Length: 288
Image (cartoon, helix red, strand yellow):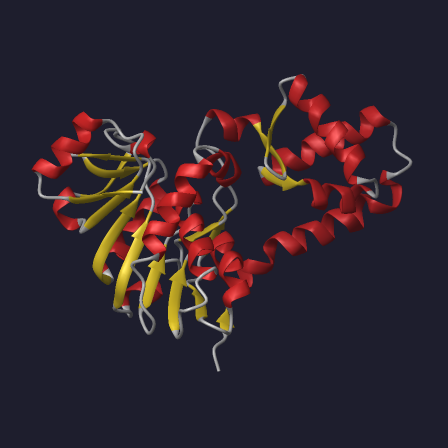
């Protein structure tokens, strides 16, 4: 029997939605529009990303009404609309949210995800880090009806949910646990890396914000980078999945040098010059 083991953190979004509903749902439908929008804005500031469905349930109004509220707030420059909801401008100006990243280069990420999933064989153990490109890998894995007894460790709540439709037919999902980062729906330290010292996987798939011959693999978030680094060390083969916009870029935090990466899967939009430099360091590259 194949099962899903999820940490308590996976219920955070649901619990938050219930708490919002308890606070505002009864009175939300009768609030003046301006007051409701102020409260919607306050909710987005608090949670960084909120979905249309959660806001609709919380304020007791239709999703059409919430979309209108979000559009008005976006036009005023107070939030940014993303797929399925909205993020606060403070998030937009700093690290992109998961939803923003998922919107960017979506077709390329889907092709990269399919190419990565094609590497997986039945009976293997995988590690997938939290991110929009690895979410595309998870979607492609879930669509493979031929796979059996694949075990996936992940620190990404969206990754776990994406794979849930393949359970128990082909995939077992184990969430690492840890402290929730709402922007990326990822689990990090404290307690985010304990399990990574105890497993030996066949493949690790990680995303990044930059990959460059001299700087190596880099990332925006210090907390996520710590987990990604250990994930790369916990598998026999480390695969970086990154759309072409990340190739040749250098971000804030160093993850690992190029010689610790076994394969880069990117797309044809990647600049030829940094690709050549990466190949010159001996890195195998696949264009999806």
